[in-house]
Structure formats: C-alpha cells, structure tokens
Length: 162
Image 1 (tube, rainbow, N blue to C red):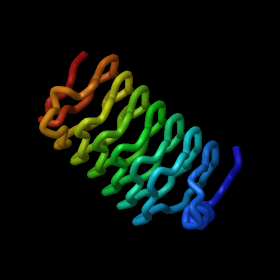
Image 2: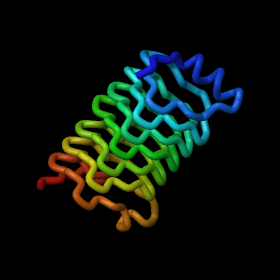
Image 3: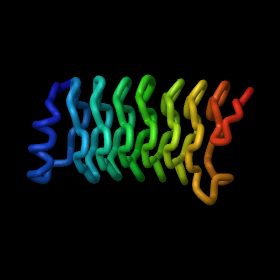
Image 4: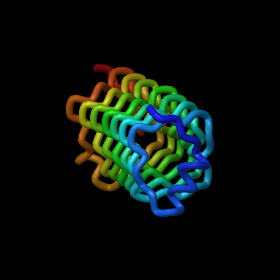
C-alpha cells in the first residue's frame, strides 16, 4: 500500500486526478475540503479529520476509516460498502443515499445524521447509536436486511434487542 499525504491528494485532485485506490493516509485533515467522484477503494485512513468536508459520490468501498472524525461532513451518495468505520465519529453527517452494505459500524455514534435512502444491508450496527437520525420520509424502505442491530439505539431512543 502506497503512503500519500492529504496535501498530495488535494494537489492532484485540483489537477483533475481522481484515482487513489489502495493508498494509505496517516493523520491528516480533509476538514472543510470538497471532493467529488474520487475513488479511494481499498484505502486506509488512520485517524483522519473529515469534519465539515463535502465528499460526495466518492468510492470508499473496502476502505479502513477507523477512528476518523466526520462530524458535520457531507458524504451523500458515496459508496462505503465493506468499509471499516469502527471508532469513527459520524455525528451530524449527511449520509443520504450512502451504500453501507456489509460495513463495520459497530459502536459508531450516528447521532443527528441524515440517513435517508442509505443501504445498511448486512452492516454491523451492533451497539451503534442512531438517536435523532433523520431517516427521511420513506424510512420504512430503509434496507436493513441481514444487518446486525443488537443493542443499537434507534432514532426514537429505544434500544433494539435481537
């Protein structure tokens, strides 16, 4: 896995480069940055700062984002399938239309996030907090098939008991 700095990613992105598949980024900041349609498939981000970033329609499938801070970010319509988000802070994040299929969200705090049209099929949400999340008008269409929900705090504050 090739190590790269966030500064280098942003420099290349400004030049039109959007392929960063399989890179490793350590302790940097995307805070308040904008990225559209970038491919980070299979990449590793170690405790990175994504606060208030606008990172839409990006591919993070199979990426490791453990311990990263996403507070107030916008990840709408991004692919986070199979992503490891354990220990990440996802409070107040726009996750509308995000693909979370088979993602590791165990113990993650999603308080106040927008999860409208997100796909959680097979995701591990065990002990996650969905308190005050906005599931959108069509919340009953949320895909939670095969999702692990034991101990998950639901939007209304009740705890799911499997």
